[in-house]
Amino acid sequence: MIPTTTQNGAYTISRIAPRTVPYVQWGNDDDRWKGTIISGDTFLTPAERDELLDQWAKAVKGEGTYDPAAYLISKGHTINKDYKTTFSTAPVTLDTLNTSSQSDTEILVNCTDNLVQYNNLGQMIPACAESWSVSDDGLVYTFNIRKGATWSTSEGTVYAEVKAKDFEAGFHHMLDAQAGLEWLVQGVIAGVNEYLLEGGSWDAVGYKAVDDYTLQITLEEPKSYFMTMLTYSCFAPICESFYLAHGGVFGIEEYAAAYNDTNAYTYGKATDVSSQVYNGAFLLQQLNDASIIKIVKNPNYYDPESVKIDSITWIYDNGENMAQFYKDVCDGVYAGCGLTSASGTLEWAKADGNFDKYHYISDTTSTSYFGGLNLNRGTYALASGACASVQTEAQKIDTHTALMNKNFRKAVQYAFDKATYNAVSRGADLALTNLRNMYTHPEFVQLAEDVTFEGQTFVAGTMYGELVQYFLDKMGCEVQVADGIDGWYHPEEAKKYLEAAKAELGDSVTYPINIDVVYYSPSATQTAQAQAYKQSLEGVLGAENVTVNLIEATTSADFYACGYRASNGEAGLFDMFYGSGWGPDFGDPCTYLDTFRGNGAGYMTKVIGLF
Image (cartoon, rainbow, N blue to C red; front, side, top):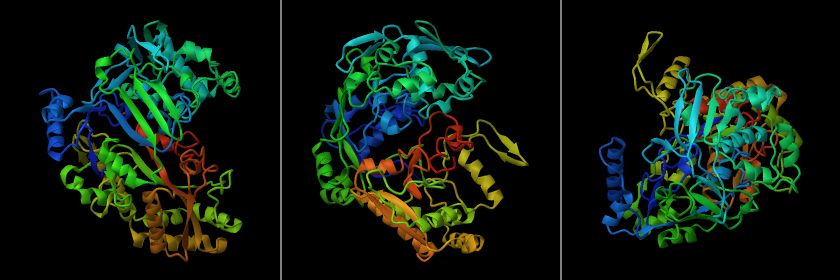
């Protein structure tokens, strides 16, 4: 795999005040929109944005408060309490414990509260847990559940009070579903490995409701970062009584059988918003995967003062008509947008003056995208016949043989001109801004104290990426891991690795080696990126050696089926797929690195066909 980019780092115009969503690098909380402050008038100017960020920075230091609504009103803005944005792929389930896909959780996280949350100052605050304590040995966490918090139906009717047993039920259900969340807590929560792998009893799992308002979590061993894990979806509650009433059961085998009985099991169906209840700031009222998703303010929410908007609406947009989309942004239908060359929005914003008046460069994030080479491909067309590969049977074998060669893979990696690939969306002047060169965000964590290793002292505050770079340099590796540079692109090295690969492969393959890349053709940006990737590889390695076949996906469903939603390498319809990424789930680098664990344990190793 090769890291490619992170989010944002683009020219942007927006009516949204900065730092009004939870400010945190991990978990699901940065998708919570309840505190969003939106101007009902014009986009924010750079001066207004800078002044707000200055107020926010002072508030973080305890030197004042951050009230963006009051500030905007003082500048003549009105406040819009109905937020609209777009989506291209909808949730396929309302059961956020039976999925590990962000597209399923990023909307529904607004409807579910965990034990704790982060606020917009980056501080962890109580949510469903009013308080908590930790045993002296660091193993037992006791949470006092807030009294009076409720579960509500999609129509706003109170269904039940939130109890500690709902958190135990949620964790039990998450383990039973085995949808890609369970590995996060293996080796963390006592008894989980035994329950999942050895037929152990639920009674031995360290996640128990002691009484109606007390939840006790027991760890396998002390984890300094454990509290940061609690904002991720695997620790979300479910309303136990509602779950059982809709065919839910507990036990791994029992759940598998129940889930397959579609007549009896009706919990969390994406086709029916009434098949779920909610304890968060919003209620899901509409979900149509081809038109609209809408959530509205929960009238029964325990903390109504924290909810600054009345509704959020996502309108389906496949990216085909960017001119209409940009017009809608300017007219205030949507709060803002990124400005890119490929979509035309950058040119239009410069022509109408919005660029000069309002643009800023959006912050990059801790999410890392990467390009993965599929080492165990077994799919060459979707069941519908769409996205069919043009490779012959002999070419398929040749591609697999070449991809199993380390030097060939290195040649492909070092031939990828990420700056040119990125420029089609960011523009030439921002081509490097959001490039990422290591899977873990290089500034994700830093040393808390001085550390000396083999005579080299690393001072407190040294960033994780600086440590990685030091050891890569000692190994003689050409890669540079800092953000904002094209740290992998080395054409001459790519050619050397190709020659080494050809020597090793001998006459076992016939050239050119075919590399299939699927792209979403209605998107001008994706189309241009696919073409840039093809030109990069063939230009460096020679089309006589490597041919990149661009496989057109005409619908977003087909595109995601080829890669993002493929369960493993064999199901993936690609040789190279750069649509995968990872956002950290908690505050330790292992949240990235564990996704590539061996023996099938890593979430991402399956994506590239290793297991």
